Amino acid sequence: MMEEKEILKALELPKETHVLRTFPFNRLAPRFTVNDKKFFQEVVETHGVRLLATINTKTTNIPVYEDAETVYQEIHLFQIKVKNLKWTERIYRILAEAMPYPLFIRFVAGYKTKWIGAIHQKVAKTGLLKISTFAE
Image (cartoon, rainbow, N blue to C red; front, side, top):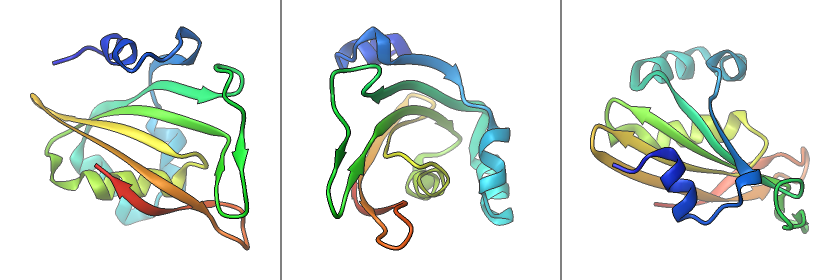
C-alpha cells in the first residue's frame, strides 16, 4: 500500500500543495444532516479523513477557471479510510455537498483502494457546485 507522500510524489504534485493532515470532523459535521452525520461516523474510520493536498493558485501556477457552468478555484485531494468500499459514492456526495471545492478522493479499506473524482457544475442561483458526473 502506498504511503501518503508516495501518492503525492506519484501524482507529481508540487511540495507547496502538500497538506498531509487529519481533517477535523468537527469542521464538517455542522454541514451534514443528522442522518449523514450518523452514516459518516458508522462507515468512516476514526480520524480517517486526511487532507493530502490543496491545489490552487497559491500552491501552483494554475489559474482559477470559471465560465457560465463551471468554476475551479481550488481542488482538494483527500484520503479517507473506510470500513468498506461499498459506500464510497455516498461518502463522496456527502463531502461534496459540504465543501465548496471539487474533490478528488482516494478511499482505503484494508488493502483495497478506490479513487473517485467528479465533474462539478455551478448552480445558477447560488453559485455553489453540484456533481454532474462521477469518475471512478
